[in-house]
Image 1 (tube, helix red, strand yellow):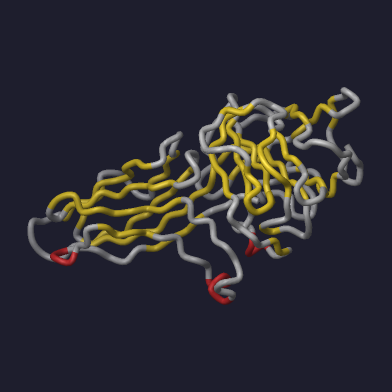
Image 2 (cartoon, rainbow, N blue to C red):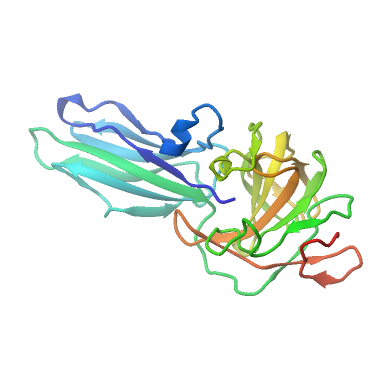
Length: 289
């Protein structure tokens, strides 16, 4: 259930350089074919602002998130950038920050720039090779595991290789499986469709743990988030209500613990859980916990 954003920019330059050029994330051709049938996640925008004659600065602007890994690629015409391209950065808790300065090479004549960007939630870090022990991320139950590691959609290379899905009714209380800081959330989507083009249409909460890993709680119901950005939560704290939004075959909760490799790929981490009988277990598909 990892997400990326991709965008393009019109050119700016010469006497026609605009005061603020926004590099908006654009839908793929497949999404354009079904315009209006999905709800895109646009929490990250890249903005270019003219700061002096023949000079522009490019900034990242984040809403409803503080942790992303972002890659920016610029195409320059008679201009230079203050950072080598492509540029990959981690927001590291920031919601507005400078990426690069662009300057015309000469004092006169046409110049310009355009760009593309991609991003995903979380930041890069040292990978954890051993299993992480979590509390069960819900109240009540038991609930049946419908997909575990390397399942139907938890495939190798998906970024959710070791994620766990539980079937549960819409509105079930979802809890933090480990303590940490809320670094991203969404709760405005109404869509839930068994189609991968809706992977960025789900509601979610992402929590950063003290060891640098991130937990994504996915497919929450609309207006089903009960925490705020930057909130510190303890293990077992209620963070929202389950649902079936996004790329989903029906109501369920998706939990994935991960770290990013770059702005487009991530590494998921095997999970074990303290179950209600007190044991630490690797959960199995088809079993109720």
